[in-house]
Length: 209
Image (cartoon, rainbow, N blue to C red; front, top):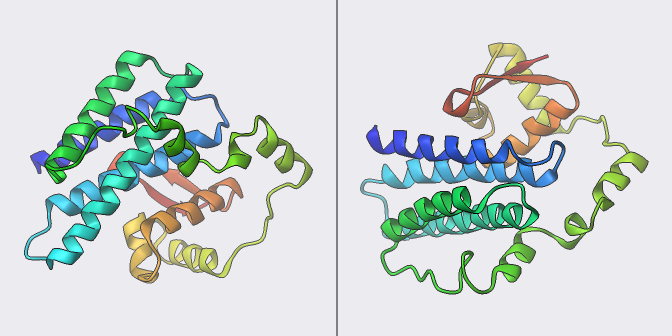
């Protein structure tokens, strides 16, 4: 439990940094989603016991990649002046410690904090999103669709039945869908005003608005 508390505390610190991102900045939601994915991965990896070696390596590899992408998001925010250098370094150093614990042979040279940063940012942020105001202009000209997908319909049915549910509850109904995809669906439903969110951190749940 102490280890999970450490992960939650680190994620909470990241969220505090994200509060300094401009309102409506797409990178803010991407970073939040990635921070949650990292926390889920950390909890999963720390609890692995008796798993096949291949499955363990796959889980750790995905977690390392998610951490690097999150660090790239934060690095980009620092470059824009949204967060200060001291807080950025503190958070990234904590994640670097975790990366070394997961894989002691993990090479930190030429990674997010060193050379090759531009390549990493380009890999996690497609060019259209880097173009200034291009996405916002597109949304104004073509407002987001109000249509509900079949998967989102199942999510709404579950919320109506249970009154409220967490992402893990939704995944029991959609076992073939990753938590990351479910969060994207729920975020879309939030934007469309179909659901509301309550709680915080690992106690977040959703209900029909």
